[in-house]
Image (cartoon, rainbow, N blue to C red; front, side, top):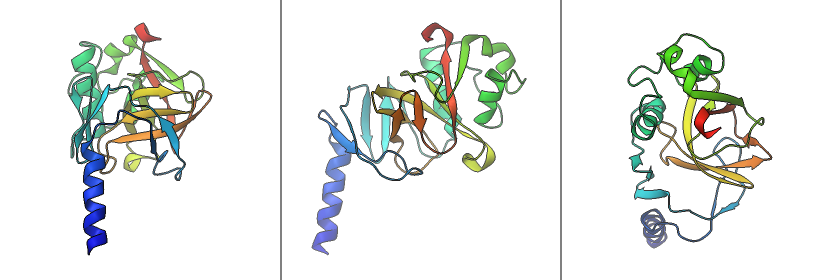
Length: 190
C-alpha cells in the first residue's frame, strides 16, 4: 500500500512540476519505448492530469482531435482553417489539401497550406501532423507539432489517450510513428 501511495505522489509531482530541464519520455505508444532526451522550451506548459497548453491554446478531454487543431489555427492564423467545418474526419484535411478533394470547406482554404509526405520535409513547430485512416477508427488523426529537435518532435493532440503530449522519434525528416501520412504547413511558414 505504501508503494502505491508513494508511486501516486511521485506521479502527481511529475505532472504538476513544469519541465525546465532535459527529460526522458517514451517515443510513442505505437512504436514501443525508447528514451529521447528533449529540453523543454517553455512553449508547452503542463496544466496537470495529462493536459497542456501551447501558445495559450489548451488541449482538452473528449472533443475530437480536429477540435484542437481547429482552435489552434483559428486563434493564431485567423481565416486559414475552415471553422466548424473541417470535414467528417482528420484525414479529410489531408485529402482536402494534398489531394485537392472538396471536403469540409478545404476547397476555399487549401490555398493557405502546403502538404508534405512524411520524410520529404523537416517538420516545424505549428505544423499539423496528419495520420492516415489506419488511426482514429478509420477517420485518421491530427496533432500539432510544438517542438522539433534533431532526433525528436513533440506533439500535442486530443482524443488519443490520457496524456495529450507525446514525443516521437525523428530520423532525418521522417517522423517514426504508426500511420503518419505527413505534415501540413502554412505556406507562409514553408
